[in-house]
Structures are given as C-alpha cells and as structure tokens.
Image (cartoon, rainbow, N blue to C red; front, top):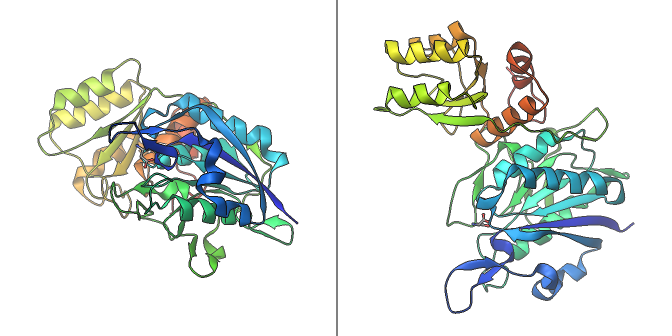
Length: 340
Ligand code: ASP
C-alpha cells in the first residue's frame, strides 16, 4: 500500500538559492523540487505539498507560524499517513518542540528536516535529509505508524524533536540530543530503536493556544542585578525561564535572593533550567539553589531551553497558573523530560 505524505515547506536553507550577483541566500520557489531531486520519484510514496505563502528564513519564525503549521497538520491529519516539515535549521528545535506540545496524542509521524547547504549545491546535505525523512514518515508496521511523535531527522540521525538543540552552524551534523538517546539511525538499513519511541494513549487533538508573555534570563558572573530586577518587574511578563549554573545554582547575595522573592510575590512563574548541555537541575544540592526551594519555582529538570520555552508558552496558553502550572510543567508530556 502506497503511503501518503504531506510535505510542508516553511523555508530555510534547504529551499534557498544565491541572490543574483551576490553570495546572500534567499528562499526560492519550491515548486521545482522534483527537478532538483528526481530521486524522490523513485520512493514508493505519494507526496503532496503545502507551501507557506512566503517561505522564510527560520530566524523570522513567529508564534503565528507555529499555529499555522499545527493547523495545517491537524486539518490534513486524516488524509495523510505522515508529515515531513522542511524548516530552517536555526530555529528548527524551537518550532519542532512547540509542535510536540500542540499536536497532542499523535498517532502518525511528523518529521522535521532541513539542510546546511541549499538543495542546488553540489555537496548538499538536503537530498539525504529529505529522502530519508520521507522514508521515516512512511514507516508503517501492521497498518500502524512506527513513529507516533514529532521528530527531527538530520545527517543520518532521527531525534526526538523536543530533545534537540542546534549545535553546529557549519557541520552537516548540526543537531544533538544531549539528554536522550537517538530514536533511529539511517545506515544501510533504516534503523529505529523502539525502546526509545514515545507512545500516546489519548486521541489526536490540536491544542494551539499560546501565551508568549515569557522571557529567558541567563545568569553569568558579573551580571548586573538591576537587569534581573527589571526582567521580573516587567508587568507584561508572566513567566521567566532562568538559565542557571550547574545543577540549578545562582549567586547567593542578598539582592539576588530579594529579587527572586519579589518575582514570586509579583506572581511570576519561574522555571529553572541549567546552562549545562547535559544533566539536570537538582535543588538543594548546593546552598546556592536553596532559594528555589524557598520560593517554590518550577523545576525544568533536564529540558532543553527550546523545549522549556515552548512548554511554558503552551501551558500558559491553556490558562494554567501557579501550582497547577507547576504540576503540569513537571510532568513528562511528550517525552521532553526524564521523569524523576
Ligand atoms: N538561516 C537558515 C534558516 O534557519 C539556516 C538553515 O536553514 O540552515 O532558515
């Protein structure tokens, strides 16, 4: 049986070309993709396209694009067996993380991919990424999709999307998944590691509401306290992600502690993650994280900054606050964190 795949093109290097007379890359008309990669015709799948009205560099992606993408997938969900999303690599982990929350109860694969070199370049990585993504998106066994979550495929590796982060601006191997094993590897065979795949119990449902009154604050030695104070005092801010040192540590001076208490009194939602690539937050391991026990913040555990940000926007969008928000945030919903 021929599987039907919807390929959604949002923009990114994969569909860019050099602007005439310059070295700058701009998006090109994607309609001639079959001319660029005639090999696609050899894959035993039926492919249809959906193109964003104006393909963009992913640095221009906004919350409205996430909602549009989620809506396109939801509206076409029953007509297709799988989805491949072509997206710029710069913010791919943000978009794919967000989609992993918006698309609740997925029973079909959604595979994000892109490339480091444009599709028309001789040494492009676009062909392999695109073709193998199509294979993963059409992988079924006993009439059931093997992959039932949002993934990111890049340079022979299949990742859980909400565990990834862009790691290299130059190498073909552009993404890593620092706290979760890869879900598959494409060698001579198309490898999938079933023990790591996410399974959904509930029915598919699009939950597209978002609240972007959030921000990220990065601590570093020498950071001015007034900048932390103005971040938490901003009346438009609902939730703040704190990128802390090591296992969740911050400076222990009176002013910093006072600002943390103030943030809590103002009703701000604080999510603590670590600046370390690997490992997780552990309150109380050092004295410098005890303030978080005292004020009762959300423990972001081993989440990437991209996943934490997406989850915060999404849960705030559902209208959750305070204890209820904390309880939901700390739960593993789409495989984005390692449960205690
Ligand atoms: N600037 C491009 C983008 O993210 C980079 C890429 O696609 O790799 O859209």
